[in-house]
Image (cartoon, rainbow, N blue to C red):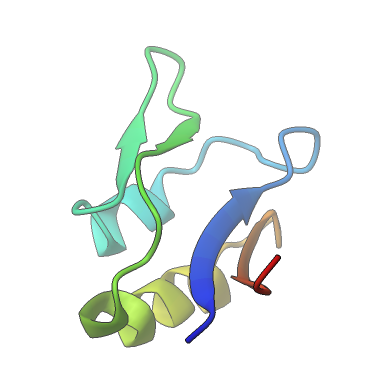
Length: 69
């Protein structure tokens, strides 16, 4: 099984915070409101992670599959 991870483009991110509202289990916000990604995405949260990615108004969040090494 491939591990899924969230990635944020720090240049594109505008600190709206919607991702953290939709996925507080995996996304914290720093003191300026930018996302801090805390862990790989567990299978049970994959759909919620995809919703957070789709809701990002700056298109700065991605859900990636990390292939086996």
